[in-house]
Length: 551
Image 1: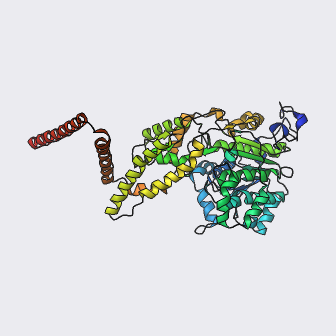
Image 2: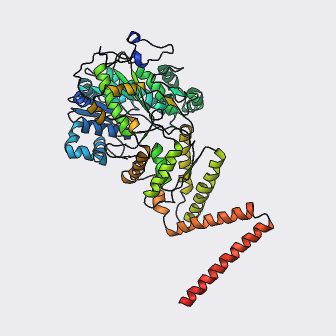
Image 3: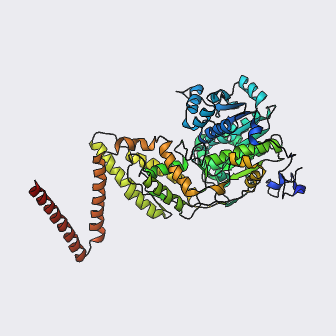
């Protein structure tokens, strides 16, 4: 065994488990390393790769990076779910037309020939893969990247189990049949164990066996499952984090039959460098918050200014994922290695700093047809947050809806703000507290890369310049992402001069109301009030008289 590979590891403990049943870095190193080991791109040359979730945000970046940085890869098989109004081929065709693939298109206009779609449905038995496709996949696949999952925090438990756990079980079953499989890389989340404050790169045991839980819930009515969900997930905030923890346990059970790696990214955001700085294509997570704040829709957020915002650029996650695929296949660790792909412990950036730089960026580079001037504020105080929601969100929404009713249009602003508050509420758990993640495996993997691979597959979060990244992130939301859904209504209705006049009138009336009801309780205050009003009238009279003389 190479001393370079296992530098600093206790070789006597290889393959052993700690008292709590977890596997640590020192327990996982095995295999032989040669001094002339192939680079990452050389390893993927001639390989056939299976990717789930390829039409999602991270999946698309993974496909693009493989095609661009590993141009000799043989084929990318992607599992695709046909939609009611769009065939599988049409979905893949639309994906490949995306600007994300511009650089690949320049280098190889025929890159699409390497992408082979496979019809699949994660909610169906056997993933609904046809026998012919199963035979094809089991005969040629070398590496599997499992990116597919539901990322909805409020997903019903049964549905989340099916997508995040059962589908993973079935994919692992398929992987066991693959004759030439060298690595299985599972994308999890750093928040799978968010009920702990210190999270090591280990798979923590759960109080329930995933298989027994699935069998128990199969016969239960949805209403019963909904009632017992809080007790099942315990001190985790939602079904997403709970089912991702279950999926890790399912993957761990196959670690002695398949070479496995698990990637745990934190809050995945826009790209850092590749293929373009600030590339984004969705409205999820921080992107939706940034866009809503930049449009002037979101004015208040409940978060701790001092809490670490553990953002991680999507291209760094994908670079780590591909490097982990190479390491897992070449070095064949005895047990599944977990990689905490986070920034907070190495290069921390706080929510207060995020708010400052996001607002500054949008003021320098305003979004088109902004609803209001960007001015979102962060507060950890619940009552203050509710006050600003009332004053800056609900009152204006009520006025706008009233105007829309009077003009014969359908009122929707209150509904839009309610949806916004619901989405922000789901994020509050993660924006009001800190976690400490161990990242030894990520550091170890970086040390195994050649200098050239460290540049091509860079996941060194120490190099992140946060102000520059946030600037590019905000510009990217304007440049790469066509804002739909929540903001679409605002784009349609809220930018006429009449609505702006309503906003100014509302703010003026609000000031008058607060003054008369809460401030003007003394004779002196009333005298000041009458003096200011009379002064305004005199100024208007003077202005009108001057205009008349001029004419």
